[in-house]
Length: 319
Image (tube, rainbow, N blue to C red; front, side):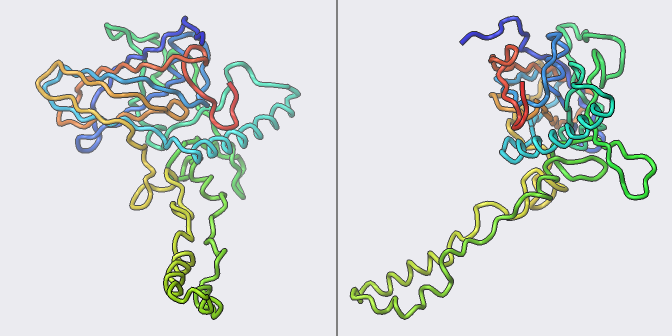
């Protein structure tokens, strides 16, 4: 299978460990954004990107624990994204109709955040070379070296003169931002108990008229299992993992997919295996006692047919 070989699949950046509270710090990368900047062509965020591996390097003497996290790679995340995309498109098409236009410009696209922390956190990855030079020295950390503006919904509340511009996150609760997984949980059909066999079936007198008298008690036990066991699905009836406010029964912070430890002593490195990142959004958590430590990161993408990398459209999207 022929791939586009004129693609730079290796993304390199630095993490600066500057925790706000305790020893944990969170850093975010948008693979599509960095790929677009590096290769000077547009990569859509609405894809599941396949990562081959990540390597971390730290010259500090402190021991560093690392967690690599993404949104849940589940059908629910795919469907939540589809619903969010379709509702965003509905607003955009209405605006196009008013303006008498047929389509957007080539770079106008649906872009979301991983979670609420991603929206405001300053630790967003920027590509660097081997001497720490970035692609551009102008603009802010969120827009340089090009324009990559996250999408919003315009939501009108009763009594409001102007609609509110609300940013979009993949997971967590809907509060000041719209959570796609939370909104899916709000509207999805709830499974019901399976009642194909009435709960009184094993008490029927007809079951006691069997010619195989020694088996009557055995059959009664079997029927009791049919009545009572596995009448509900093997997942929570109403909660979608990844949606809502994180806490007991709500694993709604980014999910850990790889872990690593850089031992103390200086000039150590460690690599993790590959994984799939929905929307190409990754959270890297660093845990160590030393503040302002710099950790180098190199991420390799799997080669493939989407402009040289392996990526599949999120459900409902197009490449």
